[in-house]
Image 1: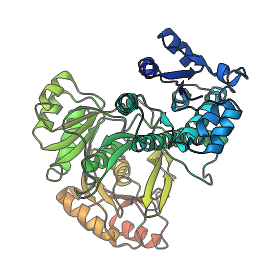
Image 2: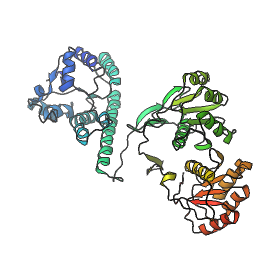
Image 3: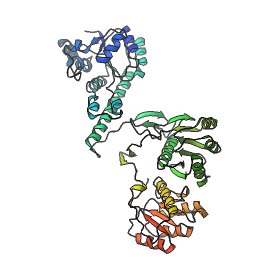
Image 4: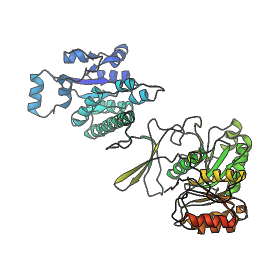
Length: 512
């Protein structure tokens, strides 16, 4: 009794041999298991096996090895409680002063293509979380580590004061509970999916810190950027920043909005976003052509905006982009010539996103005070809609193309939303208005003379025929909207009166 004992069992072997050597030099007796034990032995660290401590062999293919009173008694005993000390002595249990454990690689296992449920379940750690939770609960006496980044501090404190401070032990214990909570959250998410449950009675989510932010939406708000483990690779969270200042809170939100819109297009497309709304969208024969149209759509609002493109940025496009003050450019790649041009702007952020990755099914999480709203992403597209034409006139081929483009964009505009478009670019966008005709007037005013012969898209039905009236007077010849109002007949009649072709999709695209 009385010797210092450390228990080490890690799947992440980074720095573990060096750490164990330092502990051994500080007088610790090292207890270890399996692969960790072998790694320490090979590294020249004196080590005792778990079975030597418990007096019981590892059984059930290693599923049971640390779940034993000789281990958990040493982890949970109160050092200053005489009855606890007496029970340890009576049962020949040694105290364990330091624990270094991390868990079976569950996340890495389920990220492998074609992983089976059997493999995933086999990588659910049982003994590891039990040891970590016991040690963290008993952090008044025990130092517990899950992260190699903490090895140096612990060694330094032992060298300087023969032990860690209570403050350090409490911080490490908190990290342990975050670690095990995140681990269990991933398992819960996997098992819930495996069971096919869509709305479980409890929802647990976990995210990993990607970036500390200088501030949030405004300078007086603190903020950070977290990434979902195994989240979509086709996302801002998974983007590689090639150049520029670090992203801000508003940058990240706007970049995400731009990326979600450009995902709608298979042809070369460019999207400009300001304050979470598109200000210009263009499609073309190549990315230079597409960006030219996005710029032309609103050359005023694009200033200081975020640009997303779905093709490699080439030299000519980079030259055009360079002429404008922009915050961020997002693309699947940048040519060497384009990088040379754009990196001349010190603060311009360049993000490379994997457009080759499949967009995984994701949910949006929106916090309210005291709660969380969860919904599927709005992945409903034109091809999914039940299209009908209630008016006397059907759209022409060119009008269909304009309607489709408007419909792709309008679902990404804050409601109430109206988009005026032709076959390859937006002409006017009305966003976030309290009434639909107000949104239409903004979009039509922005489009101006270009509205003549263009199409209009609405994210929700027309409660009255006033939007159709405004559209007709501006020269709109085709309208796409969900339909479903009790006064649809009025809008249809008004459209027929002006010879407008109107399409119903049966699907609303509110965005709040």
